[in-house]
Structure formats: structure tokens, C-alpha cells
Length: 474
Image 1 (tube, rainbow, N blue to C red):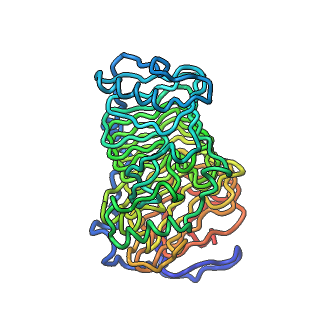
Image 2 (image 1 turned 180 degrees about the vertical axis):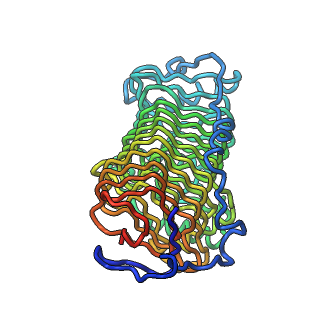
Image 3 (image 1 turned 90 degrees about the horizontal axis):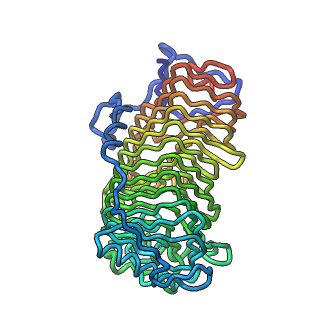
């Protein structure tokens, strides 16, 4: 395998030549104190870890008993508030030992839905849960995370905390109702409330005192599980979310399969496992207003305080169309991300930016390691196949040096992209052991940007040219 260790910033024109060195290599920076103690050539768990993930991630089972919401007063006219009826059905199901709370065909208007253990909220084919856009319907406030910081805020549209064996299933539709006249008008990470929350986290304000909700403008996720085990989200269609769509937090044994998300509002990430373990995402189709699948683990002071990584995640047989990163790690990743496996996915459209998007810097910190991508068909990207820039957003202005290492792309076919790579490590913390094996990038428009990256290639072709040295990409 051809090898390159890169120390200095390199951005050369298409015809520029690289100064020769011994054995055709460029010496890279040594490991620093900020990096893991394990050896730089540690191959990580490899694809053998997938069997363990599948063994430990099994959907919950439910008693064969149904609780139709219409028997508790819900009316399928799209205007009568069914919130109380749904809550009563969930409570009855839970108290009886569990089963399915069934939403039959028709449109039911509702506010926040709070699941309980052993409850499967089953949205039947032809059924729509239409969620109110009145913020008061999502009070009182609950424990949640907003962009990686914990707070007391509006309830997610479907919410569970400290539950076991819960599900949202069925061929029906979950419609968040969000528009630019309602939830989406609250957009902006630079908003006063978002800034205030991050400052509270930095100042160590207790979470119970970080109260937002009424009079504030932090949007809630669509489906969020807080500290839950054994979760299944299956087959539903999700439309018009206020914010992130599916957001497991501090949760374990999560299965998301057969879900179709078509929600193109601001920050409408598709599936965001955060500080969660053993997550399997299968057979989903995502058309999102932001990242399709974004793996997170908290931000800044809260990420350090909670300090729980996201790990042991399998993504397979998905179609990822719109809009930013198809597979994203970060930008809230202070607690770290490791052991992520992506295979057999179809990616790309005229509206998708990146294939693999790793977002961090010295303010966000964290680590991304043992990231494996195999057999991905990427049709079209408007930007890079891989983007990983430690100088993005706040840049190198913090004390949390990030680490990215052991990233493997194997059997990746790219039809068209603007660039192959935009990758910037730090001299003190290079991007380490980034490998491409048996990959073909057919039509790449422009040169790559590479700084402080250790790369290696085996059977890698770009625009019909076999790449044996990253200088050929610059």
C-alpha cells in the first residue's frame, strides 16, 4: 500500500510538482501528548465488530394487545385535539403490561406525545399524526439536549425518558407541521437563547436551572429518547420537523429501519444518535434539510461533563439524498465517536454536499476513530467526497485538541464530485491512518486540499488515473 505522511500545508495547482524526498515520502508530525496512547497503526476493531453490534442490538418485543386511540376519545378529523386521548391510551397500555397503542387510518391532531415503557406507538397505514405548531402544546418543559448542551426546554414531539422497550412503528405518517411561519422562523445557532445556553454550560449552571420553553426560541426535536433502552423506530414517514428528526440521547440498543424522512427545513438532520451505543440504522431513505445521519456526543463543557461517546453503530442499505453530509460525525462530538460501520448505501443527488463529513475543531474537541465505509455508490456531490477540517467554524481557538484516526473507505464508487478531499488536521494532531482501498472516483472537477493528513492508497483511481501519491490530487 502506497503511504504518505503529510506535515505542511499543501495546496498545489493541477500542474504543480511535489519536491522529491527519500522513498517518495513526506515526513509527518510525530504523535503528541494530545493523542491516544494506543499505537498509530492500531487497526481498530474492524468489520468483525459488526457481528457484535447486531447481536447486541435487537428490537424490543411487545405483548399482542392493541389499544386504539379512538377508544379513548380521539377523533380522526384533523382538528379535534387528540393529545389527552393518546396519553390515556399510552397509560392504559403501560399499566396493563404493554402492547400497541394504535393510531387507525385518518388524521389526528396532537401535541406532545410521551411514551412509557413497553409501549409501541403504531401509526397504521393511512393514518397521520398531525402535530400542533402551538408551542404551548409542548409544555411543561422536559430534559433535552439542544445542539449538544443539556437544558429544560419544550418537549420533543414524541418523547421518552428513562424508558425500556418502546417503539414508533407502522406505515403511517408523522407530520410535524413546521413552516417558516412557525418553528422554522426560530432558526439560528447564533440566536440569543442558543448563546445563553452554551454560556450556562460553560459556567456550570445546573441543568435544572437552564430553563427555556415559554418565551424562548429553542426548537425541539421530533422523536427523542433520553436514557432509554431497547428502542425501535420502524417504517414511519416523517415530514416537516421543527428541528432534528430522530434523536436518541444516552440511549442503548436502538434500531431505526425502513423510515422515510422528507423534511427540508433548517437544521432538519435526519437521524442523530448522541452519546448512544449499539445503534443499527437500516433501509432508510432520507431527504433532509441538513445532515442525513449525524453522529454526536455532546458539545464543549457539557460534552466533557457527561463524557459519554457514541459507539458501535451500523448503517446499512440506506438511500441518502439531501442535503449536507450523507454520513456526518459532529459537530457536537466532544464526548467522542468510535466504531462506526457504513455499508451498502446509495448516496448523492444534485442537492447533497458531502459523502463523509467529520466536523470538529479545538473548541468542540473529541475524537472520531475506527470509521469504516464499504460498498457505497455515490452518484453526485456538489462538494467533497470527504470533508474533515479542524479549522472550520471557531477554528483553532480552543483547548480541546480533536483527534481523527483509523478511517477506511473501501469499494467506494463516485460518479461526480467537485473535489475528492478537503482535509485539514493540526500539526500537533494530524488526521491519522486515512485509507482508501479499491475506490474509483470517476469525475472530479477540482483539486483537493490536504494538510496534516496521513493517507494511504491501494487501487485508488481518480478521473481514470491511478493515484499512488496524494500530490496527484492537488
